[in-house]
Amino acid sequence: MNQTFDIEAAYAAFASPRCDGSFEPDFYDYLRSLGETRPGIVLAFPPKAAGTFLRTACIVAVRGVLVRTVHAQGGRDASFYLPTFLSYYANNRPVQTLVTHVHMQALPANRHFIDAFDLKPVIMMRAIPDMLASYLDMLESDPLSADNWLNISVPDDYSCLDDAGKADFIVDMMGPWYASYFSTWLNYASESPDRVCVLTYDGFVANPAGTLQELLAHSRTPRSQKDCQAALEEVWAERSLFRFNQGFSGRGRSRFSASQIARIERQVNFYPNLRPLREMLVSGA
Image 1 (spheres, rainbow, N blue to C red):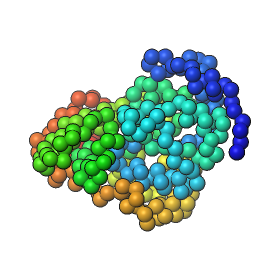
Image 2 (cartoon, one colour):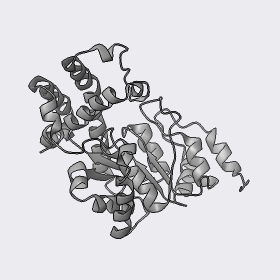
Image 3 (cartoon, helix red, strand yellow):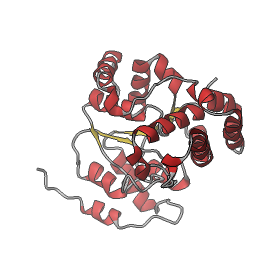
Image 4 (cartoon, helix red, strand yellow):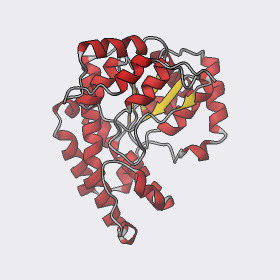
């Protein structure tokens, strides 16, 4: 095993950023110089948007490795863990290409971190009711997952609620996170279009290989259409292992009541930059 150790990385690990998450100029320049040495694949997808499936296809396509880049999976909302990136860039550990999948909003501290390491995140657009419907399915099939999700606590008596009560909980508690997620990332993408790649779920369903190829090219790990197709076929054979649910659009509209859909629309409408996308985010149209 390579035992070299970058002393500058050790100093950087203990250098606190400013309160807003930005870095002092010398520290920023050092991190940027590290980020330019090798690529990494960052899927900042919302939950239930094919992220687990696509991250696995990325790993196959580039012979990469899945890296947990947050402090702990139970510590949501996700924020990157600096020592993991210092190890990857300064000490070449792991030697394979880093592939990470984080349910992260583009909040200011996260943006400062992404800019400092010159990361190239990819996000996925999908109708919020469809993702919430998949969330309901997951909580039914995997009751232990309630310990390990986003920035909400699933109540102990969740399983005792009737279907309408469960749907109310998901819409009222998870819906606002999705609205904020899309607002922060689309603001970031509009300000830094070369940094953020915006994919759509319907585009992925229509052209999986093309979507994977676009994702990898943006991440500075380009692969051919043939390589992308082969990776997808390998992962598709074991899709049940990667939480691939029903995978079609529009199911949320029939899963939730008219009043619940109206509440999701109201959540979206709080953000001016989402209003032009309301039909897509609420209806999938």
